[in-house]
Length: 457
Image (cartoon, rainbow, N blue to C red):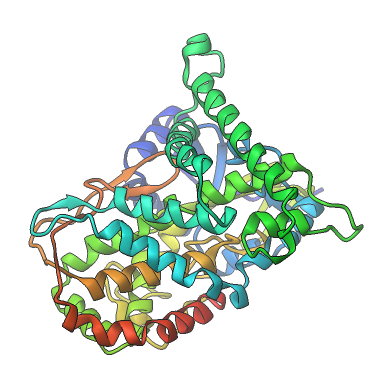
């Protein structure tokens, strides 16, 4: 008989524990870590009794465990993204689907999207006010949404305008429902679930037309967008993805592929304005065509301001041995990304914002984990890394970002993402064209270098 050994944790009522975490996530995780150490058991809304881990060896063991032993947590974004989404699939079905979706985001293909990303960044930034403070998160959202729409579908048209309007609403309602569960029948047809269902129906109709049109295109084999690759992809048995599977996966890419990236860029602006010497060095590097410090800065922003602060698993075997702990079948586990990134042994002076720690150094696969880890690491990590690099490079090249003495922006929990409470406020002034010419000439080589590095992150 297996003896279960669980970490200790608070004994206060579950709703009190959940309320503390919902209203002050980072503060609550750190308080629990200070009291119980690198592993503790808490009661979380919707997830119930959950083991939270942040000890590096135990996290590595979890991420490298077979999917026969541990797999995705049951309550996940698949309930909003659909049964064909990578979030919803487990075991062999997840492995097969992931294998089909990897090629569009492989390092060798990333160069296809470079010009597209810069074009969208330049177009959006052209409307930025000069000398007047504004929030950067919404324009960053527009950049990343347009990028992922064009990368997925390859062109623009009436449906794209409709998707630009629809997707932010779909993501916002889904995120709220994920964080604050509301019964599906609450307020009947006027409730949030009904609103989400209406948005999803509109999405399915729009994307269904785009899938049908692409499938009938005579030039499908010559296209390099994600939808074209999905339609031509085949499982090991030679079968194709169904249109409903494609629709669910496209929604996964469209939703997960823009909000988190845009939020990280808004956090980057927030951090840089409060570190003027680093900002000066980044501008100088961009003018000289370099990228090492910029890449390190993005790594450090994601360490100190992870947009998603935890990733979950569920024990599928009869029991699971993880270092000091023996966990029973069905046990929910959370890896605290926040606490991993706070670890002084992994990151000396961890609370400090210090991009130089990553200059010339690649972060550890099982210690720096803003994209999660193991078989469920974010499939678009390399794409997101390249996109953030290009957008930040464009900002530094074309604009002077004014420093500020304002206090750090607080973290606001938006249901899934942790965003700057004031949306990354900035003051910019357009730089003279002469000051940016050298950076423009060497942009392509710097981007290629960053993309290559992202694949190994």
